[in-house]
Image (cartoon, rainbow over all chains, first blue to last red):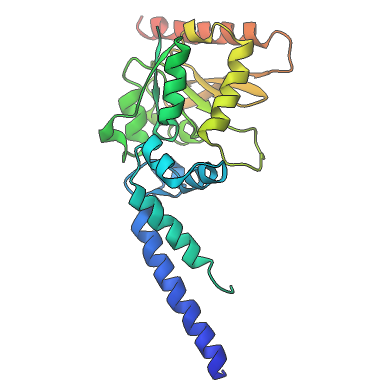
Length: 89
Length: 167
């Protein structure tokens, strides 16, 4: 493996590790909760709905306020998703 | 006035405000102690109360029929039609419900006891639970002319199940 290739691989690994850490901090998968659809940790609110609400034009502070969710938790989740997609796959 | 209990997915201040302004029914938010609860706990706790539960979780009844008491205040599931390439949001759910309510104007006075309804943009399905098993009572397409009277009949039939169960 060339040095450049190994640096790309190492970067991918670090990024993935950090993204996984962020995501496992704020996402929970439990078959007994929302049928195993990933939810924000400590809630019954699915990550899919959260993203769909964002796609529908709602801001993170608005979602946190309207659904009584922790804003910090949502921000960390979005950071984790961003990090996981920030680079070549 | 009927009071509906929202699951957390629908527990949106904007939707709640709209419902209250409409003035036909009241709604209550998910109790704090259930915000982290598993599906069977949510069902067995809320469906032993007096308020029909409204959720966007289309699988909850199918996955946890055993946690639904034989007599209960009602469970309403709002969802997209199958294969819709969109995730449901509260505003989409509100639009689906608005379409339903337009053609079922007595919705706010109709008892839902013992019925499980799944409402989509194109149809409503009605189920009930016997010994933990779901039984489908009917599938009513909004394209059918008399679907609302058919729905009313199915709901009445399920309300009567409580008197049969209670002897």
